Image (tube, rainbow, N blue to C red; front, side):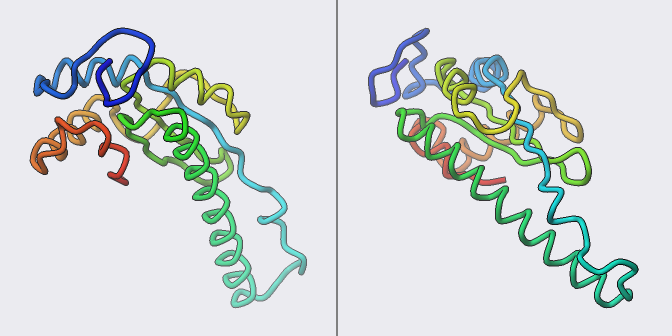
Length: 162
């Protein structure tokens, strides 16, 4: 794989590649989902039968805290990928509610998936989206990169947040 750093695995020269279907196939074959449970303690109220105004305030605080925890976990995983030299990846956040959250990672390099499994954060498994089509997501993201002139620069892919 030519990504401006040494890597193991199959060799894909993304520096000269503009074939979106080939890139999309590689990203979809390396698709992992990390399920993160919500912090139940944030969602239990210290005041039973709280008035509506207090209930709304407590709900707002719980959501802000949960969002902060989730963003920290997402940044931790992204940093782990970057530290291991993986820069050609996309990630997407999904979920909320009692089922928790899902962090989806689409990586160009298969060894990145092994790193996500070993990160020890949540339950990591094969890609498992609920509310979006992974193929449409990947194609849309690749087209965004192509329009910005960044498709041939896989070191910049991870900068795109969704």
